Amino acid sequence: MSAPLWPAPVASGPVVATVALPGSKSVTNRALPLAALADGPGRVRLALRSRDADLMAEGLRKLGTRMVPSNESVSSSDWEMTPGPVTGGGHIECGLAGTVMRFLPPIAALADGEVSFDGDPHARKRPMGTILDALRALGAHVDGDRLPFTIRGPLSGGEVTVDASGSSQFVSGLMLAAARFPKGVTVRHVGPPVPSMPHIAMTVQMLRARGVEVDDSERHVWRVLPGPIAATDFTVEPDLSNAAPFFAAAMVTGGSVTIPHWPAETTQPGDRLRELLTGMGARVELTAEGLTVHGGGLHGIDVDLRDEAELTPTIVALAALADSPTRVRGVAHIRGHETDRITALATEVNRLGGDARETDDGLEIFPKKLHEGVFHSYDDHRMATAGAVIGLAVPGVEVENIATTAKTLPEFATMWAAMLRGDAS
Image (cartoon, rainbow, N blue to C red):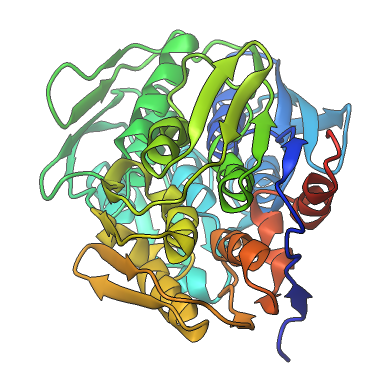
């Protein structure tokens, strides 16, 4: 049975709106495991509630953490968290969440019994061998090389060499639990460059904020010393990557969109939107009210997005509407994301009459008039939002399965409609 089609709204004029975003998935899905491994009860405020975040919370419950939500809304919650001994014997459902399938196995290796993992059909194709082999090398017993797999500890830690060129999550996953291993963990990367390095910096920063000693002074080596993880009262930043489609709306329509509470300093890769959108013709200003993007012209760009690959679908959507060619480089690893995003983006832009061409490590997009048609999401939240961006300027675009945006932005369709009305959220 095919997923329903969502008629993408066409903008009737310049979009002028303020859009309040829920918490960062990347920060939420690091803060929750760290709170679960802490040396006492703590709180994670304004945590994202989405499919990925809820799967993380449920997985941590299965591993022995008591989690009580408060101040709940559709897209956020404050979590009161009481760590307990890591327990085995359970099953963890990963969905399509890379953070769940890569961050929870090292924690499961602390358990007193076997833990099984599985996920959505496409999740079974996502690369997992790097982290599972690393856990084997550190002493865990692992049955399987991809989902589904089972894992059993205990392991004492030590040094392990990995090729993390497929995902920075392999490094972060090992580091998040490392302080709880008797010997800590040293992760040494050998291979092509690691993508999304800001996400590793985020992990390091969040560990240090909880008193964990991390030495990253040597290039491509991360040493996490054993010791307690301090309990904290932590507030999650807004998800800056989820700002991308809303800012894109300002650019496509020649309007302005403000995202409140934009941090002055952050490790989130989404902060690079300030540079990228300026390069494509926007005027960007950060004030006490937040970050505002003012649309003007919409031009192509030549850009390496290795460290900000999650922004690729939005940049490609803008490129398909721009007045000059765009080249996106350095994102070969997104072929292993929720779907093969390079092929999916080229296919869907071309389905609407565009000219998008795959390269070894990205895409080239050339200006061409687009027409109506179905934009398939491939059960990928960022593909769905890319289709919505194109639909602002191209009448008759229908996005297949807009509900997949619930992975990180549960109220996307409602927020999109409110933005077009000019409502402040």
